[in-house]
Amino acid sequence: MTRSDRIARLRTELEGLTTEHAAAEFADLDVLPTRDVVRVMLDDGRQVADAVLARADDIARAVDLVAERMRRGGRLVYLGAGTPGRLGVLDASEIPPTFGLDPSRVVGIIAGGPAALVSSIEGAEDDASLGAADLEAAGVGPDDVVVGITASGRTPYVVGGLAHARGVGAGTVAVACNRGTAVAALADVGIEVVVGPEVVAGSTRLKAGTAQKLVLNTISTVTMIRLGKTYAGHMVDLQTSNEKLLARGERTVMLVTGVDEDAARAALRDTGGAVKAAILVCMKDLPGPEALDLLAAHDGRLRDALEATT
Image (spheres, rainbow, N blue to C red):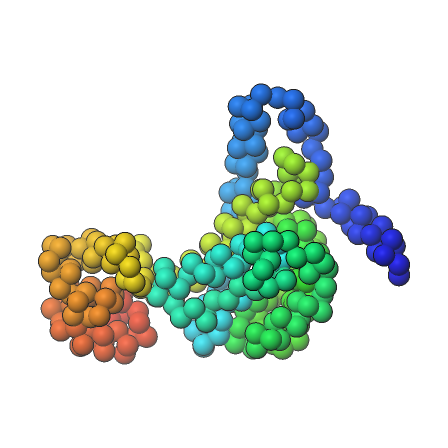
């Protein structure tokens, strides 16, 4: 097949995608006052949350799949090209400091490698074999879950990656913004969030990107909740690695336990900055090392450790 033939076929594929449609109501935006264009764009974006909420059951299935694999030592691996790839890398980078997770446990892989985070790497997303090769290089296996992210749902890099993931027994999740997508057909869980045409036709960094970010936030955060990384709505496994996070850690201990600033600071000092253990120190009057041992005995689950001492 010649390059012209491939482009013609791709043009036909794009014509069938709602994310590529040009909506008549946006045709005159370039001649409207700035204030009106801003309002149109923001009003159009309000439907994103509802579109994501409509896929809540699928997202819950994805969370259960990820949590089950991570409990047995596996990883959450995001895979995407362009904006979806950047969103995956972003979410992966934010989970370790927020929830005290080893950075190797949540991985973001983008077509074209790290350089693609700040520049367009032409052609990378069109290579299905590259998606498979990148996952193979990352050592993806049966304990991992690969989340393929693509607005169109047909990006070859992601399709190839998900096919490879299935072949090695990894769990697979697809996040797309069209119906009946190739990636959803490949995945254990398909999350198709249909947000409709963009204000600028085909610019899927807009509503589609917002929807994907919300889905990824939900998958990773609820997975961390399922793994015991929160307690009573607080980030009790955060890493107190800088002044802001240390202040947040002290505040969390104070809010959860009701102790004053001095007691919270002393408990954190006695536990090496471990917020969950500091909460145990304050609530159960335990020495720091004993609180740490108790947490370890309950797989880091604060609620279980607290109940075990009642």
